[in-house]
Length: 323
Image (cartoon, rainbow, N blue to C red; front, side):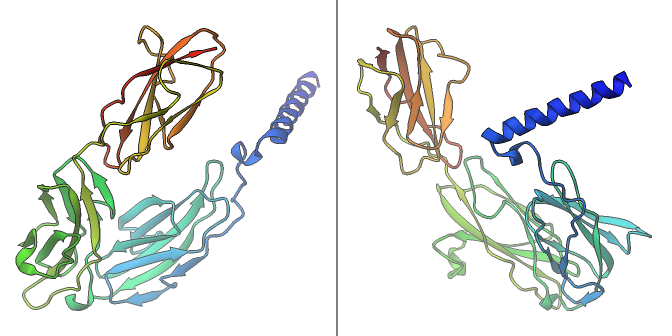
């Protein structure tokens, strides 16, 4: 009886703490709603659907409070699985994947950090069909990627019935209009290609599959950008150098058009780091600094980082004294 009363007291104290916390913050930050009783409604392909397209688009209704979805595909069924084709997590309520002709089952469940739904399952039959009805699925780099680390590993999923692939890479302004001016226009038998750009710019690429008698449709067009040039030097705005200011003080600097974020470095008067929080990365062009040490001199400088990860030079160092 004593142990039971002690346990109940502990539960009541925990509940009391949670109630107090929820008075000042959002409870959803600490407790996620359970989704165990929810059901994932699969939309397409419909159950027992038959298709002559190898590239399939799976989609389902979103589940409230779900953070991700696990999609699995097996051949021919989950009760008598001969091959696990796919087991992947996605944050979206849709997923595309290329299959070979055959009988499959696919299923999806919703998940969050504390719970998950049961699986919802559909059967799918993919029939063999002409290569001309098919489309290649691109893999990497992800559409819209910006990077400063060449070469780019261009890759795509294999397509049943193909013996080779035609890869085209063009400048984003070219739009594949002039085959004589393409950067890459080559037929290869594997599903990957290493591309080393020679200039900072955006590029587009696409792939089609071929065999002795037919060609597939062109894939979707993906883009990527190479940027090997770091941002320029940041100009500080306020406070001006060597002034006395009241705490808190707002540090401001001019924006750079190619900057994705900024790194602010605060230092003590001997140029040692001000604390473990610095340098700090911010997305805006200001930072509010608070100090309780009157008469303290603080040094500061800022540098820019672009979307590709290039880091620019630090600004000039300024200092202020907390009054």
